[in-house]
Image (tube, rainbow, N blue to C red; front, side, top):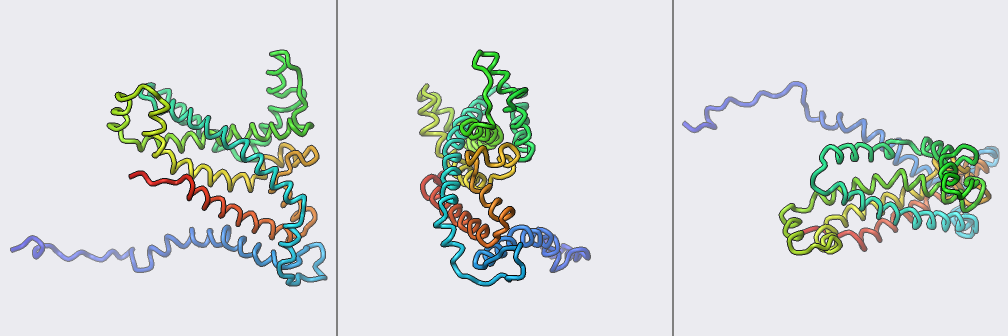
Length: 304
């Protein structure tokens, strides 16, 4: 007699039914709808209305694309967007270069305990919230007792009023962003390096002593997916960067650190023009999607 004929039929699990998987997924789906989908739809609807919460008696009439036309003709909006782009092209190359250098050092064989400690240390900046990073930045770049000025005085440069000068404030928020997100780049690149087949890497090391050639022809194809993810995530993150900059500089002095998220917050929650602020937010979402598609088309490559 065959073995399958002798097997007893499986007993149904009384705790598992047809709808059980849906009950497990329901909390995540509901949370996503409440936190992600609903605010986006609300902003989209609001962007087509005159929506000023300080004038409820006027109502919230539908005005079509007037908010978008106002945003696109607003010079301050474009100045803030240009400043955000300047901040992005300032911090991202440094984060990529430093992250790649750290990943290559951690990828070297040996030093097991030291590498484990380094990986744990890299998580600390990522686990720090933006507001706390801003508070740390205010302490580091404080004019009277900041660590940055103490170091400069030790080498004979003298004190710099970082947060009260336009160049200094921009440099200060850039340094704090680099400190927080360089470990993220390092961990992503380290994961990409771990995907390189060991035998291929060893063969390449025997063929050439050039580390640059090894990186370009062997390791780089495995780093491109991670590089694409870093560029997409950092683009979206810089466009919505608010907490750290607001805590450190409030967008000042003047408009030196008035990134686009700071400007949108001022329009929406100081002027209370939620219609215009929503239109600005939707335009940022569109810009983020376009940039992401460009990065995928230009940089992403499948490793065969």
